[in-house]
Image (cartoon, rainbow, N blue to C red):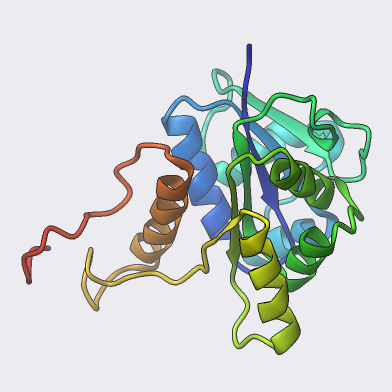
Length: 207
């Protein structure tokens, strides 16, 4: 039986994090179901000049990820399709990763709004007690955002802010190395093996 990770990309700035996480999952041979919110399409266009059209999703996503998807186990669900597989708890899934997670997405998931498939699928993942990783990127944060993040934590989600560490590559780390650090932490939280960053060994100056 196919049991995929569901990856939701919301409208927060930080689409390179989503790209790295998707790449890591596919490199590990994991099946993936992808949901990209309406707002995320605008962010993708702004940050990467990439477009994702429902009717041409495979070509568009391949262009965004910079990889051939011919052999990839990747399924795409339009965010407006509230009758899609991931909207139901009976649909098999390993869990869900929301990366990046906008304040609106965090709020919607926390209160069970289900305004689109991304929010509904995340709510399903939580109610079914499946691993759920939420990657907020907003800074600074308001009290209401903190309250929603606490609610997500209390519901069983791993709240994993997009906060890169520098011990792997040092203060001169490239943007790609910092992105890979966050993506690697996301994959760690999901239990997916990767080699995206150098792990701390307890020895200073080893880079």
